[in-house]
Image (cartoon, rainbow, N blue to C red; front, top):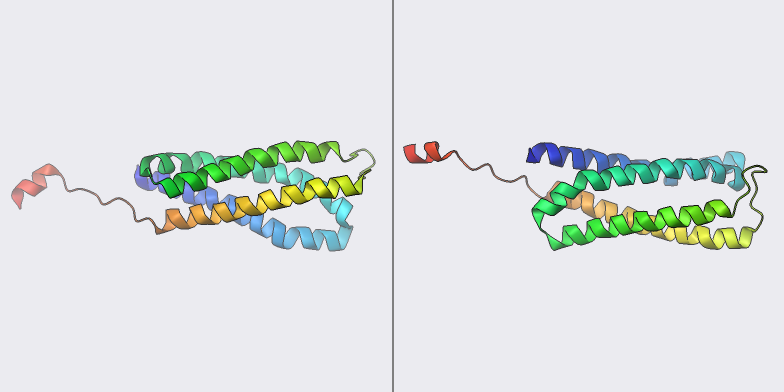
Length: 155
């Protein structure tokens, strides 16, 4: 059971963290170059809903391992991920209110980019916490399997 939980946790973290990394590092710069920052922003507005859903799934998949390990460092990292996800959801709603989806425009660029910077900083913090948790789960060896009591009697 532990092996299955660990596998699901690692895969879900890898999907979310890898997706965020590729999107932020490749898709956004290329999309901005091809379509401009405003058009790319409207793509990102939709994609971030998926990225946040993947983060939530990763949090759910890692929760049992975090709880079972009783390691403070792991719990603190997990709580940082959960808190940053909650903050991103709130800031995303705020950003949505600052754009005009019908005209695909941003009426108040200065205010939008101030709030957007908050979103980027929180995302960066979340990304770092994600890699710490991923590393911690990779580095922690699986629990040793205790021999069955009957096999100990034979020794």
